[in-house]
Image 1 (tube, rainbow, N blue to C red):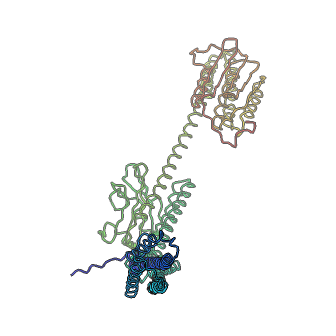
Image 2 (tube, helix red, strand yellow):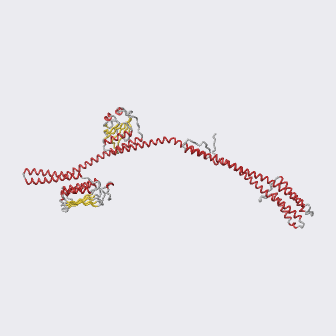
Length: 638
């Protein structure tokens, strides 16, 4: 049998507590209204009965009047008296008028009706001549009317007492209703609110185990159940808060350690200058980060056939010597994985002959982390542990990130080495070209003159011998000048702020070598040139001056520099000039070719204007050269 529990709402409880008193108040009010109606009707009946007494005396006076002047008014008085009797008998709801009938009132009203009938038949119908008994009969009739009035008043006194009792009852009911309502309000509203308040204060004080014990079936009961559920949830959360805080703290500490490790490795690879130093420092650092007992950093060649240990730490000498150079596939270390993922090698669970050196050293686990750059295997980092380990996802991610930094640093070192090799190769090529275009040609000329000298000596031709000797002297002087010029070129250094001092120095050296007058004209203010651009510009200017010295036979040289809107350099002389575009492979055209190659490497434009007898003008325009000097190098005037 299922028992159904009815939930009483707060409004239902309050209505149930107050309803009896409301019903009593309604009944009391209705009875009070009815009694008041009766009293109002009785008061009107008393007034009407008193009016009948006055009418009886008026009728007696009219009958006793000797002149008979009131005979005409007597019928009206009789009708009024009869109407009063009818009103008392039947009542009048409109006024209201209602006789409060009881036994005494009915008896006295019957006596009044009987006396009126006798009085009317004896004194009004017959009109006797002897009026001696008129006064006594009138007094007797009035006395019966007084008795009726007294009986009505006595009855009304009872109703008045009843009304007072009813009013007292209404007051008592009102007081009881108010007390009951207050008690119900305290029981059903204030007390639950107070219990909830106490519970909230307990929760605020940290007592999450406190519960509201009194749980009713009304709205406050539902609220208390919800509060208890919330308190239980808070207690559960608070109970797990310490462990969660510790867990989060541990996670934050691990993340901090990872970031610190990444920062240290990043700083380490940034300051590395050689592959050996980088490998040694990285192996020591990753051993500390991974809490490994040993580490080996292996380098793989392009063919990935052999793995060479670049650095090792914490490993026995026998193991390092035995695995100094491993062929791919000879061991689990030095075996590239197809998925480029971190590999955990459980040493004890594998055949001992495959990892005999690691097992002999007492290691339990080896963790291999491949070193890759753009899907190209560069090597691997082997971490050795004396215990069984299984890196977590976070540790795997950290190790892979560290090896990624190492791979980037190794690649940068390789690229820097290639750049240095390219720079050295370029300088050697430039040096060989300079030697070929100047000293080599002079030496070839001298070799020819030496052969001519031998021929002249065999023929004993003194004139030819003197001419050849003069040519040899001239060639030696030119070769010596070329050597000095090359030394000047290779010792040229750029100025960190402005190219003007370097140009002025170059012109002074040119004046000392040639004795020609020079002029330097610089106009405008432009962005300073970067050092590498300054070097190229100075070499082009020096090459142009060298051509003037060798071929122009000029008396003066002008160097003009414009800085705005773009850098422009012009070297102009007043020499013999030449025909531009002539394909003769003389030294002048070789020098122009060298200047054109330098300008092309910078992205500048080189133009030559010359004419026989009109001198030559070499113009270098840097409008197409990207210039982005450091802010510290920008002159204040800008």
